[in-house]
Image 1 (cartoon, rainbow, N blue to C red):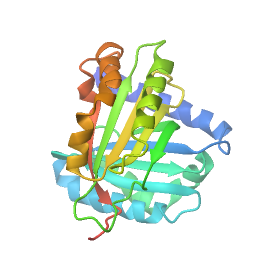
Image 2 (image 1 turned 90 degrees about the vertical axis):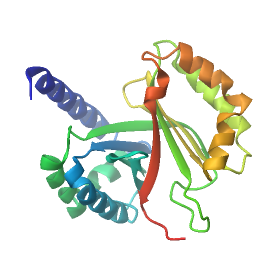
Image 3 (image 1 turned 180 degrees about the vertical axis):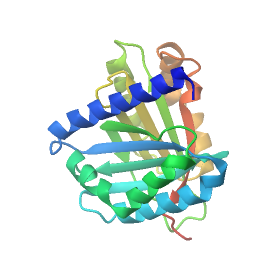
Image 4 (image 1 turned 60 degrees about the horizontal axis):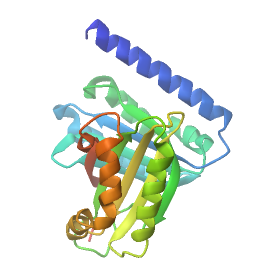
Length: 244
């Protein structure tokens, strides 16, 4: 590992520690969403799938948990994501000493290409016609799309307003199971948009809807890094697993 990589790792660790300390000060105040990315080595894929699945099974039954689910990227099973929602940071923190987390941490020491990246979010806007777990009465798995975007300073309110307008359009659309806009805590220009659709046909129809044009225009002109499509992630849920 070169000096630059070590510097980035140290800086990332410092930022994560600073954020967690601030969150501890406000641990009981509001719901929190936590997203963790794991870039696993090929030889450790199955071990991480098993460990993350076991953690999800534990977390969904823990006090204060709203939802927990694990995903891998479509086309790259080595990239895995854990998405959790808790009543507050204290509930999340209290759950970090469970044996399932200890198993994941043990795997992280040798099984990752890069350090696990955890992001804490505040949900701003939410439209939910279903939970983020896989419905048990459908034959096709829902399509989950996540967009990570860093907007230009001064455009944060505009981005939120555009998404609020779009969300109102899709509020009564049955194929949209989830539409969530979240803001990275203590980083006001960074947002994550998460959408879940009933099936692939609904997702493809959604992409062609004219109501999305204001969002597309914004992303083409008002994000820090182009193309904005690099922030898209197509996720396939593997835990909790619901058999049809």
